[in-house]
Amino acid sequence: MSKIKFYFIFLIAAVVLISSCNKDDNNVPVTPPKPYAEQYPIDIATIESYLKANYITVVNNPGAVNDQDITIAALDADHPTSIWDQTVYPLKSRNVNLHGIVYKLYYLILREGTGESPCNVDGVFTAYRGEYLASETASGVTTITSKLFQEVKSPNTIFELYGTIRGWKEVFPQLKSGTSTPNADGTVSYNDFGAAVMFIPSGLGYYSKEQVGIPAYSPLVFNVKLYALKRLDQEINIINGVPVTDPDGVKSFQEDRDGDGYMWTKSELQDGVTTNPDDTDGDGTPDFLDFDDDGDNYATKGEIKDANGNYYLFENIPDCSGNTADPNRLKRYLDKDCIKMNQ
Ligand SMILES: [Ca+2]
Ligand SMILES: [Ca+2]
Ligand SMILES: [Ca+2]
Ligand SMILES: [Ca+2]
Image 1: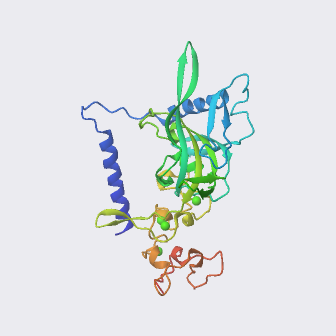
Image 2 (image 1 turned 60 degrees about the vertical axis):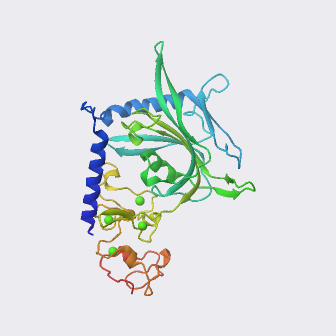
Image 3 (image 1 turned 60 degrees about the horizontal axis):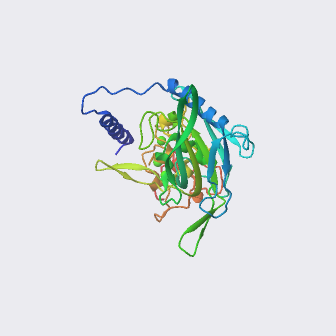
């Protein structure tokens, strides 16, 4: 099936899903979401106030479940230095140019980690604590409080970052995984993992979509610990009308052509970015989702096998001439002028 049809089917599926979500059985008109440009100034003021009115303490307890847990509380005489002003943990930010505005996404690195960094579509094995920020006004004084909605201390699932909120996709690649040691009682201890706190404007979170325990338009605070990561291979194909996972044999992190740790679909690209550096054939589907990366009508998975039909190791995939030595060679599955199948 051609890629055009593949895209078309997904478009239809997405539209049906969205319209069924908005369907109201009582025929009450659905309120359209607020303009992003109206909500963002509220969110960023809330987040910056919170950072300036509270201090943070971090548990340093290597190997234990509470290692890198945090407590955030209001400044007092004994704790006069805010998260904003402290220098123990670097307060960083990323600019995300989306929805016609430039979001500032603050995050605090508690510890970088010692292992590998996930790309922003990899799987992450993470313990996390999620809170949302709420403004409360009493006697004319507005305070920002954080409310817990979920805490996972001992994770048992791997999240595919590709399917998570934008805030997670932006920050996790800035961390590294840790080490794991099995214990005699069957549990596992994690050490030296990356840990961070993210302060996410609602436009990079769930925005107008209320979640269980999270009101619409809530800025989010996540404390995350990156225990481990899983490299994924994520192409999807349509077979007999059914979308099925159909990996091409090149792991997604190896399809990050510009090597910046981030890969975006067309709709996720930052405003003003028209050329996707990770979409080799420029057909609008980035390589990590494209089963024919160079658009020569031969599937990638057929172009990365040797004459015996066995997959090359990724680093050994030759260019069109058979060269495997030049590290800067154009591997043949990325060369649309090279049509060599299982040679
Ligand atoms: Ca792939
Ligand atoms: Ca990239
Ligand atoms: Ca493509
Ligand atoms: Ca191809």
